[in-house]
Amino acid sequence: MTVDDETGQVNDEADEPGWEVDPDDVWGLAVLETVGRQLKFRRETAGIKAAAFGRAIGYGEAMVYKVEGGRRIPKRAYLVNSDKVLRADGAIAAMWEDINKVRYPKTIRALTQLESQAVELLSYGSHALHGLLQTEEYAWALLRTRRPVPSEEELAKAVAARMARRKIYERSPAPELSFVLEEATLRRPIGGKMVRRAQLEHLLDLAQLRNVEIQVMPMDRWDHPGTGGRIQVLKFGDGTAVGRTDDEFGGRPVSDPKQLRILELRYGIIRSEALTARESLFLIEQMLGET
Image 1 (cartoon, helix red, strand yellow):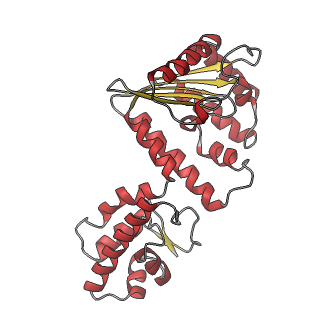
Image 2 (tube, rainbow, N blue to C red):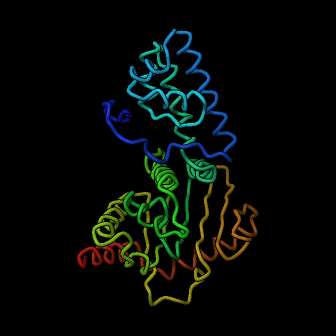
Image 3 (cartoon, one colour):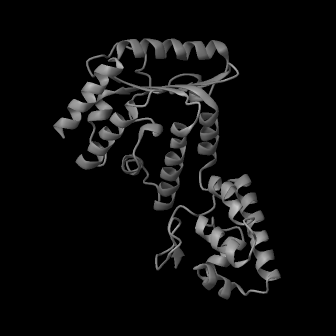
């Protein structure tokens, strides 16, 4: 039995995947253990048994023990309802800010942090759409193509993390976002006809944002420096930057100005070989009409 995050209604649903603790995430485990201890202390101080507490907040006794033992990531409704039952005046509900971060893998948290600070993003993708451009359905379908096939729990975490990164579009002042996509990527029917159609519509919506520029590299353009794989550069307000590419520097992030210059040079040539933003918009609309 769980509680819906948005409505607070009690639902007779099986425990959902994506809320388990990553055993290798030291920081995440520490956060959950701290939250769990505080919840247990407040519950016991209030003189409420675990079973009764679970009924009061809409969860089973086993879930209460898991959360208090730092073995399960509590949903927002769990914390909100616990706050009310224990009369914590918002202290427990406020824990959600840190708890929500624990859901996402360490590498994604680091990437999200960098993106949240960037004033400019340059991205060329050779095989799949950038995570910031993906719809939730496209992300699910794309991640399911991995081999070996990830578990539903791993997929749920990965998709949730990817969707959380879209907060970058809500920032003010807005960062400048430049994407170059391969035409073949847009024509590949990831997830089927309806998923692809919704993804194309989403790209058209994003392209209307003043700080977003989407360009398409036509399939007949092969002589460009992006054939080695993805290129991405994030620039920050203090003049520093970090970048990476698949085929050089071991695929690791780099911040050395000489290495960044190589990535920016390649990206500049790629942009010049791609269709303009207006031409790209027309091509995407054309693809959408064909679906």
